[in-house]
Length: 137
Ligand SMILES: [Zn+2]
Image: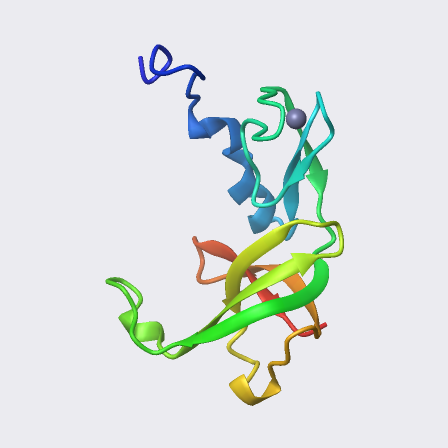
């Protein structure tokens, strides 16, 4: 029993998009597509914010896009202190979605240029953990 009876629109378990991590581990960037209106989301969503549709399907995301803006993080929240400095970026994928993610540590701040081509890729942090990050194509 969860939030099924709360509010005007029912809440659903995040398990609906639980396969996302499994896809990333297998080096696949997957988003969700609303079966009702066709809107594609990345990161994936269990429900459509556009038409409130609840039926989704997984679709592969190419990850190519352009850099919209970025910043270098010098003071990090709890748990991320060891990682500073790092670059956070907002990108727009060629498929339309805006994605907020870290930039690869292989890229230097001096190389960053708004509007440049970027590539979103799955990235293993260690043996068990995975994220997605931007890289230069
Ligand atoms: Zn929809």
